[in-house]
Length: 506
Image (cartoon, rainbow, N blue to C red):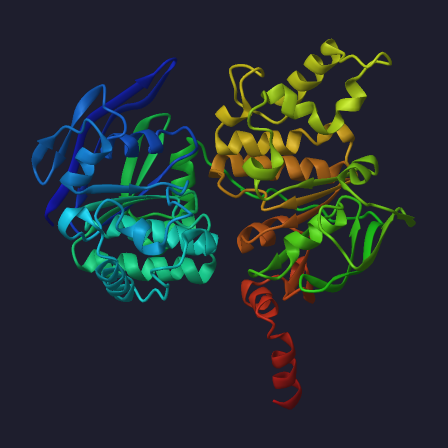
């Protein structure tokens, strides 16, 4: 095949760290190359060099056989390399058309934008990708998934030779991800090449031709996807064999000690009841709009509810707000760690004591710094949070270490129940294994864990029971021996009654 991109001996150093260390690889025309590795492996730095955002300290980039030097992202774009980041760059107050063709709008005499022509070009472009959006619609009115798709299409609109996609499905539903894959394959057939960065190893096998693995800034190896297994990739990524990603489930022997009854909020969830046993990991699964996250937030007083009761150790408790939940030992770990979970402008140490701050305060209202230091140092070790100093801002941590910090910060309240929403979203496989191990440890001490996840293999691997929701109602409950992706998806799609009818009348 014809080579379109080649990197030879690329290196990049930042203060105190060699982020990319002598990396060489190639990409053929019309090829999809998956790029995987743990957080901190060097994937992002490599992609930033290829797209002109960082200049390599050493090494050469070749495009179509010729050496190229990029002094700015615009140089890479003009040469034919585009990149789409996880963080969206769209302008919400501008229209779909204005975002796609920013700085490339058709103009008449005097530079006046020809709006009719802009909207016509946009409609034609969107039609190519079977995307039904109004060119005049403001981007802020679109869903997160639609915005993510639009961001990718904006990059495609310049017709790059190479498109780098960084975690492109992080905000997409399953159907939106499938739509993206279909269009990537369509563009691949037209000769476009892709570097596809992902933490979701299942996507490597869905979309890629070859897979390149990085670890500690180095290129560990590149393999044909057809010749490797997920376990092979994990071993290459972490430098060790993870024998069991999810660990071994223990049979829950505890009695039910936390119960939710009759939770209803019109439009979100209806008549939801369930219980959690000591030491149990209870999974919640559902498709978009199932109401799982709204239910969890309602339990801890962050979301309204019309009716519903909560029992802890057979005693009814009242939770009007998160402060009441904390007082009863109920922790909620949000799916959006950056938006709702962590205080990004504060230090790691400050985050670790935030939920339990009163317990570190003296009778005079002063902070007991010695206790704080001991407590946070112990937590950092226990949760393997990698940082040079606890005084660093939590925003400087990798995604995996931020997630471990999110769990650790709730240990100060001695939780009895943890509601964990999307526990490993945006987290690499090494950190995932550590998080799963820590959740197993907590369950072993008797903590009840409710795990809300869109990752079915994760729920099947971790949970003792799985409750499935559809449009705000519980449609199914399965014990460990009954788990199967097909059965769970049937409940999630609301087809359980149809299946029952077919069985009864079959």
